[in-house]
Amino acid sequence: MRAALYLLLLSACAGTPKREPSSTTKKTDGPTAPLALTYLGVAGWQLESGDVTILVDPYFSRPNLDGEIKSDPAAVAARAPKKANLIVVGHSHVDHLLDAPAVALATGAQIMGSASTAKVATSAGVPADHVIPIQGGEDYQFDGYSVRVIPSLHSALDDKHFMQGQPITVLPPKTFDDYTDGGTFDYLVRVGGREILVTSTANFIERELVGVHPDVAIIAPGLREQVYDYTCRLMRVLDYPQVVYTTHFDDWRAAPTDEEPDADLEAFVDEVKRCSPATQVIIPKHFVRMSAP
Image 1 (cartoon, rainbow, N blue to C red):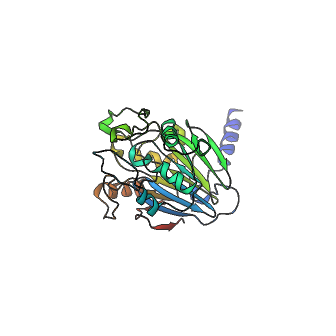
Image 2: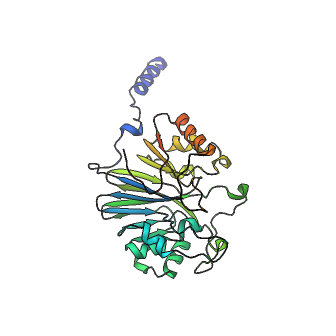
Image 3: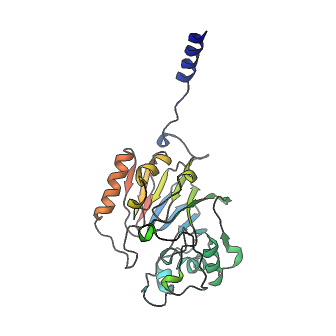
């Protein structure tokens, strides 16, 4: 009897289908449409598919951080699109949030972010019906696209002594120190029949990414050495995405320039290739529109 049960169990296990890798698994219903990605510098991106334009952490002003900090209208006018649907803000540090309210006003976009981001946006004159405050875990449907909000963590600043989740208390914030992170989020954008995971900093909560298998992953590498097995754990939990774009690797204190990858960025590319050999890694150039595979 035991032998028969054992053989039956082996037979059942042998017949269990294995999950196909993400590169061969369709993620969303409906046909895919052209998807364009443009790197805006720092952690900023412009995602376009059909009539939908989504901006991530647009930061164009690059002000002197030693004095009073203001958004530069000329920089916003030069780089922001004429129209956008939504701006998502990963966290409320100056190099992610400073220009977002001005870009929202210029493009008519709604702006989504933490309570700190929402307060800064409304204090800058963004109408309340264009501000979407989030706590993490939301999954919102819009016209032609959807956005899932994924709780995350900021990279380990100050050699792990950085206090996470501090709210912005000075409105409007005027100095570098006024722009605290206010909580950190990743976003899973579904548009054009694809799923794009956008991160703004090099850290993550692994359990929050279980079941998130994007076609495209926009990943920050800076300070990843402070996080255990950052690259391989991330590739594994994301089910080895087809394409990884690097983000937040340029000098956020200076004007955007395209330079040869430094040793740390090259090491990150090598890590992805080692952990996920089939993944294509792309280091973007500033303001160059790219078609997603």
